[in-house]
Structures are given as structure tokens and as C-alpha cells.
Image (tube, rainbow, N blue to C red; front, side):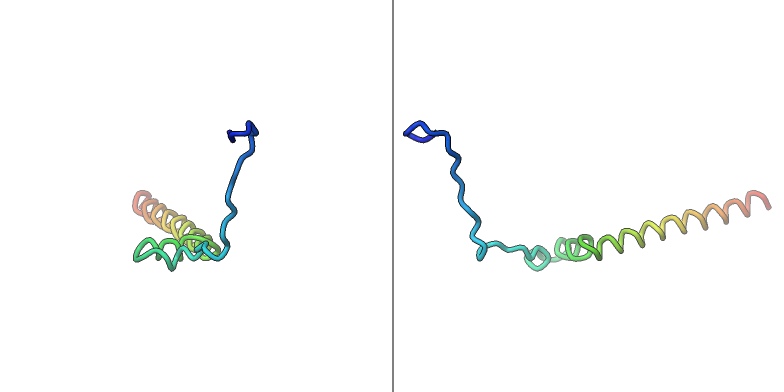
Length: 71
């Protein structure tokens, strides 16, 4: 509360020239690689490809297991 009794909230606006939104370049090593590869549209593509690869590998594992069990 101010000294004059008003309940105003004070805030400072961001200085747009001082905001760094380039996360991948500002972080070193493995963390920068993670943010570059695992976020955004590239991250979605990699996650979908990983999910499809996991499903295919489970299907192949089940097929081979079923083949040897029912042989």
C-alpha cells in the first residue's frame, strides 16, 4: 500500500531490447541440444517418430515371441 492509502499495483514493463528469447544458443552443451531438438515442431516430429519406432519394435518382439512359442 502506498503512503497516500491507495491500493495500486506498480509494475515495470519489460525492456524489449533486454529480453533474450534465444534459449538454445544461451545454454551450453547437452541442455542447449535438448532445447534445440526436443522443443518446437522438430521435437514433435522426433517424439512421433520415437513412438512409432517403439510400437513397431513391440510388434516385432511379439511376433517373434509368438512364432517361437507356437512353433
